[in-house]
Picture 1 (cartoon, protein in one colour):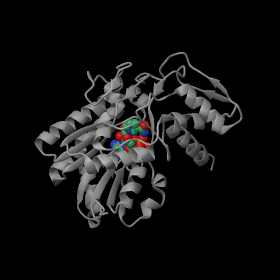
Picture 2 (cartoon, rainbow, N blue to C red):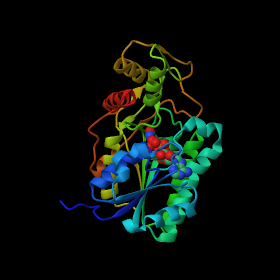
Picture 3 (cartoon, protein in one colour):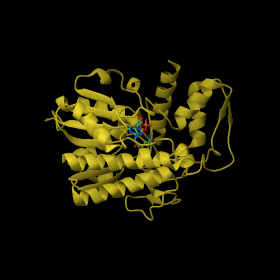
Picture 4 (cartoon, rainbow, N blue to C red):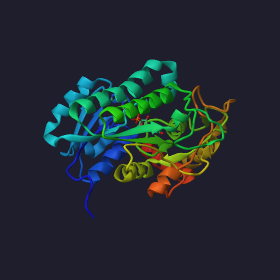
Length: 327
Ligand SMILES: NC(=O)c1ccc[n+]([C@@H]2O[C@H](COP(=O)([O-])OP(=O)(O)OC[C@H]3O[C@@H](n4cnc5c(N)ncnc54)[C@H](O)[C@@H]3O)[C@@H](O)[C@H]2O)c1
């Protein structure tokens, strides 16, 4: 079978973060050259491991909310070839931090998108793949979320700036962009985790193995997807979607798992029977959507079905994160 990406050069913004390094490995496997730009606020060279030393990869510390800095970063790696496609993953991934200071999401979640689009217009880069989120739907209650669900009223600054990014990209498709794939991720789990519920629980148990404090009453129920499977779906959409502006939910089609189940499973894998202490509210923090469920028919109709659901994704990630953080 021919390799669809051989000899292409792609840019991953936020490529030293959790999902970025997994995507980078998959693109390299397909024969791509890569430029990775990250401000290392949450990601790191260490996350990239041996990838950082691969001659087909250029890595630089760049604030991607600054178009000039992205330009300079790309120029520095011109020897790898001309970038023809961008995977825009740079964003703030700490939702409570963005609630406390809205400038964080303005800068890292929205202005990075704005700057990436400026660079694409200036360089004539045609294709953008964008890491969006279920947070753009806001809290629509028990409705099964489709790509057409409305009204889109995010309840966190993070969700607001992701939605603003989506519609800015939509306008760019009208003006100059050849193609944009918008991936609405669920909760993504795996390694090297930089944040998230499992990462938090394992960190708490490493600090105090006798007690596990849970944010919220544990009834929050959401879909979870392992990063390996997520990257597979992103590449599938990128290869197969014929839409100039394609919005896709990526995730399991199940009803998700509760935070209580995750806490108990982490405690079980960690061992030592810690006391699990719950909060009182049905949400972990301001801006937390306590319950949502995805409809993934659009992705299925494109020809891709998840082989792993929320429970299996979370179990696999817990084992990986516990092993990694204990090593
Ligand atoms: N992990 C999830 O559950 C999840 C869910 C929905 C959407 N997403 C989206 O997927 C993408 C990747 O998330 P992740 O989980 O890997 O998080 P992450 O924090 O590990 O990765 C994001 C990366 O962006 C970098 N970054 C932040 N601001 C930047 C800036 N101004 N300039 C350059 N780099 C910057 C960080 O250093 C980090 O390496 C993000 O856009 C995130 O919003 C993630």
